Amino acid sequence: MTYDELDQSILEIHGAGAPKPAGASTAPEAGALPELWETRHGAILAALGDDTVARSLRAYREWSVEELDTIGAVVGEGDVVVEYGAEYGAHALWLSRLVGTSGQIHVIEPRRLAFIDLCTTIGLNRLTQVYPNHAVLGAGNDVVELPAEAGRPAEASRGERLDDLAIDSLVLLKLNLPGTLLDVVAGGSETLRDHRPAIYFRLSSMDVAAQEIAALKQLGYRCWSHLPYLHNAGNAAGTHTNLFPGWVHQNVIAVHEDMAAEFEHLSEL
Image (cartoon, rainbow, N blue to C red):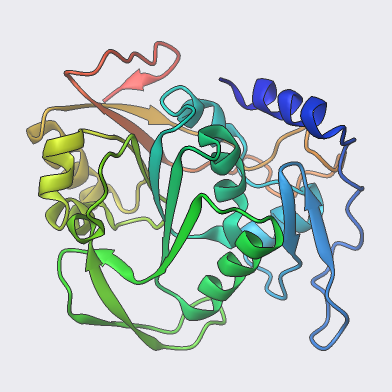
């Protein structure tokens, strides 16, 4: 199911109209009464930060929706998804609609404040099929020291392997944090062997990207390049200003060679 098809079905079921237009383009002040962003697929507590995801949600009431059609080609009702990197729960909202109440979304977030934002989104929208996990998804179980970044303090977070989740099935592994694929694969060998999920991830440096693609091919995966623009002219808020002119994510969709999947509109790597 495509993003637009799912979006229309949600509106028909709930009788909802388009989200309210975005308000001011600046971040809300700390100490102000909480504001809810009414996104196309649910409510998100307005973020105080000014990172790329927050700016998009504030202005457009959505985030990187071009990723969603590609993901929607491999995920359906009743499926199990693991997403690493919460991004305020923006895509978890949509994925929860896609898998329905019979599916599961396991969202793993290493940063404490981002984890709080994620849990707030889950609670506001009563997402009983979404399971939040505060951890670093990687190769081991040791405590990981996370450096300060993007206004967030340095902190320690526990490590967890994909295999530790002990899930009965897995259709999609979605990695929003660049440069994490190799460690996640190292800690998820049994899960990848048993379930052969599709993997959608963001690339980082050129050297690391080459290693990531090689590692997946060694596991029997085929890989396609996906370059979603951050701005969507038909965004949910009806905002015409393009805050991200020409910006794209360097993403990859990988599917095991034993699975019947083709992405003819994308370039195979």
